[in-house]
Length: 471
RNA sequence: GGCGCCUUCGUCUAGGGGACCAGGACGCCGGCUUCUCAAGCCGGUAACACGGGUUCGAAUCCCGUAGGCGCUACCA
Image (cartoon, rainbow, N blue to C red; front, side, top):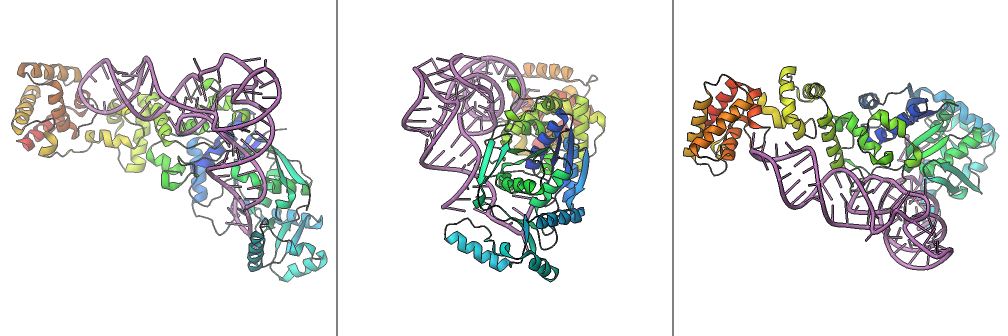
């Protein structure tokens, strides 16, 4: 039997990092076992559909490299299939028509809750004669509900948590087909997973309490169960579930902030799972070789953005200059509308690569290479520099370097240091002054390397410009 | 409220009865290096939720308590 996993997001908003998390395990597990990975769009809730959301899902999965072997399949295009199947259940006496109004349901739920009972459907329409019900269904609005056994319990095995059991009494008669003719998630997911021959169902643990309904459905249809694995949900530092208020949760946002897809995946893989031997930087391919559900822990991990940042920086540093330049170039163009030629990129990247954790920080740190800088007197007079001393120093530097033929970092540094010695200055004071003059900031890539990349003309222009400002 | 899941350093985790006065990583703190900032290197800080069992022996097994989280829709 061939392994098949699936990721089944609903297009109700921007793709969530939790979806990517599950998709990563789906993808890797399928690959490891030579199986298939299916993408299914669960668009059965017409009210919550968000335009463009589906495209974003495909976009995100592609960016991450989690490519699907089948799909995307849209549930909204399979309505007749669900309808046909649910009717089969009605015929078998495992499901029934229900004509209760939303108002009545609300009221009954309220009553049950007051009495301390589970607020499930009271089963009023369960007693209806099937012939009568069928007739009413021709002209009245209706839903179809699953007939859940009154007694006994439903048990299933979870690959991560072991056996989980529920008393049937606490399971309500779940709606399977909504009055608008669309299936609920519960019906659609079971029918599709079976028809599409999905062998392993991976999803968030928030689905655990729905699983007995699904198990009952499989049994009602007479179908074999797939394997279930409920992954821990990702949490915020305060243990609440991942939310926008605490930072990015959308994969697109991570991309825009300049996270590398391989870093995000590596980070995600480490949530609830650990690489044998404790390695923490590993590739997707290595992950595929080692994924193993028995190593997935069942407690909900906190999505620690600090660690993600460290990991992203780690990945940035490990990229070759060429590759990083390419990525920075694409990033700048896509998100900042800045176009830099590869020569400039390859010159600046080595100077900033160990200083940035996200691609977005590149512009901040290296912007002076391609943007003009503006100084003020106050900004230039760092380290207790007086206007007079600053003029003296900058003037000397400009004089010293104006005729320099060999504009190379090593030469510039050697000569500047000699100048410092002759005048009995402090090297760090002069360097800081020059740094602000050349880069416009007190924090920058190494001074002389930066000047070399910037070029003689621009560097001198900035030193002179600064000289004029402090004077 | 009911039902379910979970509980090792601040965080991600290793650990599956003796190899653990609990290991690694992020963070944090200190040092080295140093033209700023980083990076790098070295060192340090810090945890088995609690209470009962079982056992010669428990972080590891069982029960209970507490806490956290989830579900409780014609949403997924």
